[in-house]
Image (cartoon, rainbow, N blue to C red; front, side):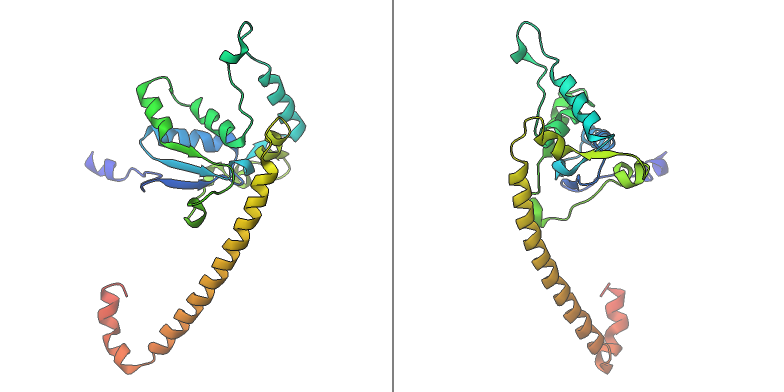
Length: 213
């Protein structure tokens, strides 16, 4: 029984996991994240506006507009509330996949953060994907799909242009950083190759290799 426990694979085991939602299918990503939240993990989702929905855009828009008319008849402000921002749509989808009215579900929902675009400080952190939820692995190549950001922008979300402008600025900075990083790695690799030719380095190389250098 102890061996079986050691073989269990935990999807996320860091302080928190940063997931880039670009190119993921909404339902598949949300179901995976909901389960991990209930297991005690902390998850941050960025670029929710670039998440995908299967089906043509017009069908998804008609479905959303049909659902948005569902309100309490006598007092519509009591809900259900239909969010328009992509991040809030994702948040509400995940909430619907867990028992959010219990203490366990409420605490799990507090461990979730969702963002449109990639705001700081997450723009300088390593982002991950969920392979089982990627559109390219789950949706047939000939199937139609649409983007959550476009859908939100046509049903009342007013910040899509702002998010796209900020993303363009972030990508410019990211490219400059990556170019500089590649140059540094190239210099280090050349220096290491040159040092490996030295007889003194060759003599201590086995000792360094034993310690992981």
